[in-house]
Length: 71
Image 1 (spheres, rainbow, N blue to C red):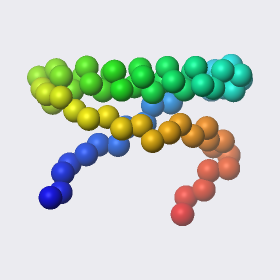
Image 2 (image 1 turned 120 degrees about the vertical axis):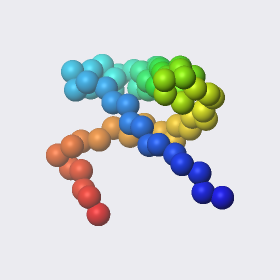
Image 3 (image 1 turned 60 degrees about the vertical axis):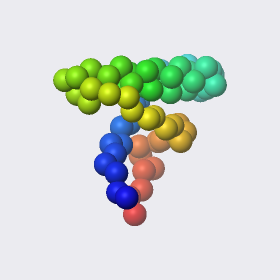
Image 4 (image 1 turned 90 degrees about the horizontal axis):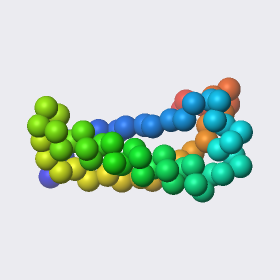
């Protein structure tokens, strides 16, 4: 049974790159928790979804945009 879904991406500002590399576990943990909390809070608002949603986080991948390839 097909179900609709939305793909949402959260990013960090470029200025935090060096700090994030030094504290990856803490920063990425905060990013994932904050992103999930934001989605859940917005979805609970009747102006958006008005209900509960599931959130899955598969991982955080640091991307060097100059080497990004599209297949």
